[in-house]
Length: 220
Image (tube, rainbow, N blue to C red; front, side, top):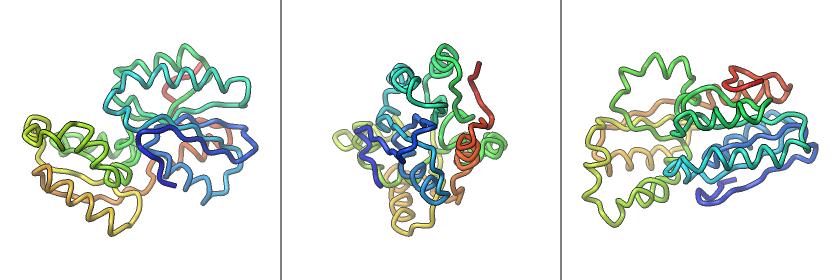
């Protein structure tokens, strides 16, 4: 599955005991984890990954998904970091009650592992990050999404304070490696690859499958 970054998508196993509300940028990895582990109780509803460019849309859209699912599911979990919402997403989860999200400020952190990401914060202060999804959709979400396709002169304004691009690789895929390295070159940054796998995402989903939250951020 390769969800379009501009669109929502739903994934249903049929039992529907637990709803995961997630960013579309995580869709492929979430479905791979569900299918590999044969977790039977998840339904997944994803919001557009391209909203990372307009994070103010995220909190209320998550609220709508929560309210639509409350009477249909035993539990609801949110697979978003704060993702640039400035704490507004956590406020929504607190207001809705009984809904928890994976810990971490963004997916780069929980793919890396939140503890490791925090420990390397100083080292990575001038790093721009990619995941498998962002490497795959670099043109759509970053090059075109930030207007660089029409105005390449904006590159230094957006990326002038970065020194390197760090690719957090969930998988070993030569094509994605090439895409990520090419993206670094286009942005004028040095390139570094780190194999993270699914990081804290897998552990959180494993506990959510059993209705046991891991490192919740908002709960009542």
